[in-house]
Length: 315
Image (tube, rainbow, N blue to C red):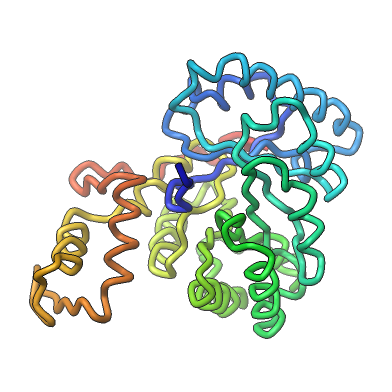
């Protein structure tokens, strides 16, 4: 069965050398986690790479043996350091236990080698947009045309490397400000518009301030409003609030069903809002996809984001 990008929810990045990575990858630990990236790139020091590759091979073997007992595991992706490493990993005997690869620093005119490196089986790609080209609207358009020609069905979603894009500007996130409040705001909006028009799902950048729950909640609202399908997480405490942010409300689900009903009027009012199937059908389809994959938000029991200033990073 095809994987929906709306199934990603909070995508947690963790170094593959963690001693509990098998328990996390099988869903026994962090049971609410929907997607996990086994990281061999930024999360590992150079001298840990060989250990990381050995750990990954061992993990894949264990996952293969435990496959029948891990039906409720999160989606699994590997983030390699390079195209050559991706090709080597794709040749591992039990690579079918993962769902795909995150392609770091995937830039225009360098996409085809990624497709070739991971073409074995039905492995999906999630290119990360984090290089200077994606600060330019025309370069972004060209990149989207390129991956469309190579095979849109191989792309589960595009990911935005917010910290890397900020680094290109010599900036770091300020406490109390979302990424939309600074110079990256127009870039995020442009990427959201370009990706949607080209038919690609897009995930929101990481929020790395674990001591600022109010700004995190504000950014999550804006992420959902921009049409992103999920968000990168760097700490387990972020999983639940990210999932809640992308769950539609019961009112939105009711409206979506009414809009898509075969006998829906051309224009009607529901819950105080105008509904027009001709213009709202795509929105309605997205709402139902979100509810099918993430459930419906229980607004009466929202917990919000609570994290200690001293909470340890997962990477």
